[in-house]
Image (cartoon, rainbow over all chains, first blue to last red; front, side):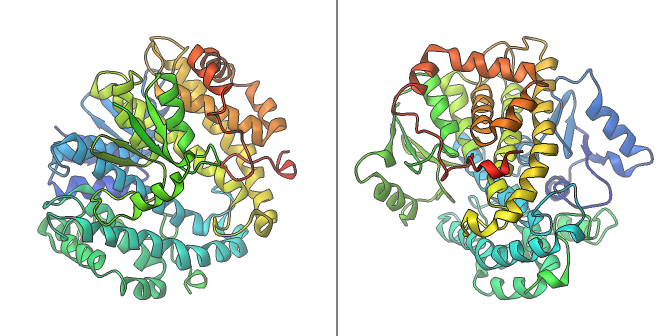
Length: 238
Length: 238
């Protein structure tokens, strides 16, 4: 199976959670919109009247005849196929539950710089962004990271992974969240990481995996920038 | 199977999407936190060190030995068990994808009155709430409802349902979204509904189902109020 991923080519964004799973598994895939004419192909597909399962927004994934949207849903589909989710239904639901909690954190990270409207520039909502980010860094990030630290501690199989004793897609996503927080809020991230050693150790373990290390050093990994979800605006970092 | 639902007893909130599925299917369930001592029982369960699959926040559902959190994940689990999701994997993923898009809309509806921080009162973020709500009503609600209208139109089996030719949990959730928009923004909702006749017809069809009608007329249906997700602040309704 050669997967086709459709996502905006200039950012990591939500598509990166899917890219990390495909890369960690060594899966064959095409990042369609990064090819010449790829954005047009993506928008044509999304707007095609012949598609029954029309996605609301990128990312979406084509797998044979199936077209699947919503980041967490794509990972729910890919998990067992890539060996990145448990075999049992209960284990898959638990993995997905954690992914949905990461998705909530990612939504909140986005809204730090766009608390009023995605349709407006950051510069048009800067005072509100400062207020929202202060709350995000003071209350929300510790709450989320504290939760994931707790989940790791409760994992009877191994506190090296979020689910069971093997890598799952949610480990990759938590790695990406730590990377994003470090990029966007380097000062706040340094402080909050001290209290979450299991999360940091998981991040480091993921980063050191050969396939991941090769991906992160390659041109396939788009650098963080101020168009994605995690943006570095120094005035927001306390 | 007698399900145990854990959710805040004073609001519809995210728990209502689960309640609607249980009620529409005539399932046996206990709304634990609405009983005497139920909130304590909910918090004790959430904080119990013996739980491996600890939820981040209510709602969560107990089904035998399983404890499942995240609203959309609970519905993913319940769908096939309650006859409210297709049998095929592709059909279940599509239903779930739509539910995740509804969850995004619900998050945005919440943030209209809390654009800065959930930890602050509405009164402490009213100017920001006005700006965010204006964008929500002008751009986001039409985009989401337009999408669901399109999905209904593309359903080859029947434009009476979102998925296939039978009721699924996502129909119930879309009903709830329309109810919430009508409560929170009666003027804006009236305007936007005119352009989305299939969505309105689906709402009316759900509402007329005998089990749903009985539930909505019962005391089990908590009225909308200004502690939930959809809140009526007249100054926000254009």
